[in-house]
Length: 156
Image 1: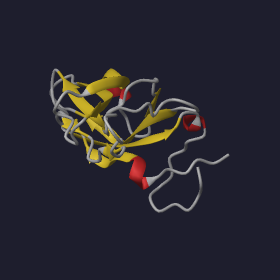
Image 2 (image 1 turned 30 degrees about the horizontal axis):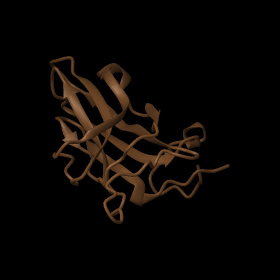
Image 3 (image 1 turned 120 degrees about the horizontal axis):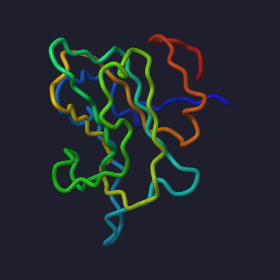
Image 4 (image 1 turned 45 degrees about the vertical axis):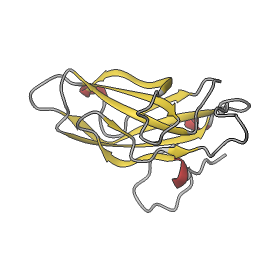
C-alpha cells in the first residue's frame, strides 16, 4: 500500500522553526450548517499528524526544546480560544530533532472547530535554524511513510 500526501493537507513545507509559530498552512475544515460549529474529524478510520525534520533544529548557545501541538479554533490564526487536541512532539531536545527524524500522533475523537493547525512552541530558548514538513494523514499511513528527495516520482 502506498500513501500519497495531499498538498492541501500539508501544515508545513520546509517551514523554518526558530521561534514560537503557527503552521504556515492552517486547514479550513469548512463551514458547518445551522448552529453546528464543531465536527469530529477523527471518527472512523482516524487521522494523524506527521512531523518530519527536513533539516536539523539547532542552537549554538542554549538548550531549547520543541513542543508541537495540534489545535483547532474558530479563527484561522488559532488566536481566539484554540483547543489542543494532541501533542505531536513534547519538549524534545535539539539532539532528537535531527534531519530525517519523524514524529507521529493519532488524533483522538473530539470536537474540532473549523480551522485546524499546528502550534510550534520553543521552550527555554529559541532555535538558530532548522526546518520541518508536517501533514494531516490517514491514521495508519505513518507506518508506510518514507522521505524521498524533492521532486521524486516514487510513491510512498
